Length: 119
Image 1: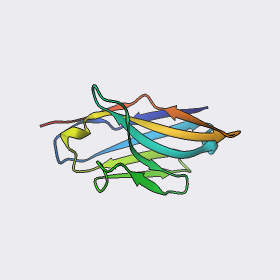
Image 2: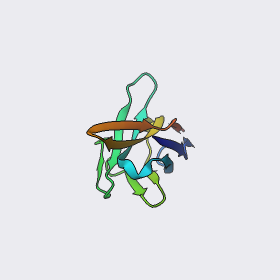
Image 3: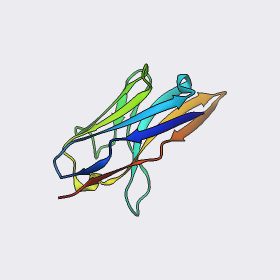
Image 4: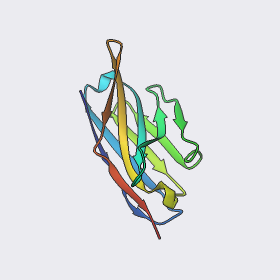
């Protein structure tokens, strides 16, 4: 089992920056990929960025060049540095961790943190 707790959300103006953090606890040694997802009102949850245990990262086209994902395996933390924020980035952001045990992938989610971009 893995527990995830996000922090860092808030209200910012367009063009500003914000940094989200996620702390993992529990069976952290079994975590492979970690990522950030978001869900805007009335929309489905969508993938934002993912990072492997080795540090390889991929980004959704909508955030590439503006967001940077990073992780510290020793501290069991995941971060998302968001820059040049737009109103379209407004959503609840969720931290995700994947483990792979006995040929089965498990997904764990945090409770979410609200990011609102508005003037």
